[in-house]
Every structure is written in C-alpha cells, then in structure tokens.
Length: 142
Ligand SMILES: [Zn+2]
Image (cartoon, rainbow, N blue to C red; front, side, top):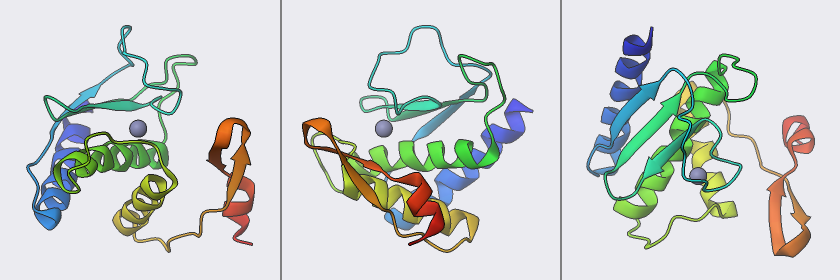
C-alpha cells in the first residue's frame, strides 16, 4: 500500500518538477505521523517539508484519530508541501510563508492535478492581521 502511494507521489513530483524546472524533491510516505515533528503550525497536519534536505514527508494516518487520510486531503497536502519546495527552488524565497498567495498557488496545483475547476477562495480576516479560508463560502462559490 505505502509503496504504491509513494510511487504515485513520485510520478506526481516528477511531472510537477519537470514542469517548473526545479530539482525533484524526495518523498517519504509514512504510515503515521512521526512522534517528534518540529512544530511549524497546525496546518502541517498531514505532512511536512524540509528546506535543507528537500524532503517531503506525508503520513497516511492522522495522529489523533488514527483515521486514514482521505485522498483529497492527501493530495492537497502533497501539493501544499510541493509549493513550499517551489517557494524555495523556483521563486527563490528565503522563507516559505503560509500567505494567501501561497494558498492560491496550492489550490491551482491541486485542481489542475485532479482535473477539477479552480474554486475562488474566500477569505476572512482573523485576529492578529491573519487571514483564513472561509471554507463554507469557498465551497458554495458565492
Ligand atoms: Zn505549510
């Protein structure tokens, strides 16, 4: 199971890296989230990316409920981590932040990979000058 998932991820990364002409990141697919994960924020629930080693790690089970991550969540995590890679390798950013532009880029990549229409993302301002995606509204599309 894990090896076929890893194979699919590798093919995705081959195509995506070839398209952007960046070095292909390495991929590691794990059964469950590692116990010790450097906490980079609550977003990184299903994977992470190491800037120095260019390694994407994804895990197939959630830490809390031990549920198998859904296909959509898994693919969107792969796109998310690949976009961190692009920030560093393609845009040459010194840091890869979770900006609104970052989420717009991950959404475009995700929908392109699935062959589904890109949704307009709706944002709500959260305290501290932060923004989060308004998922109910984004899913409604209005
Ligand atoms: Zn991230």
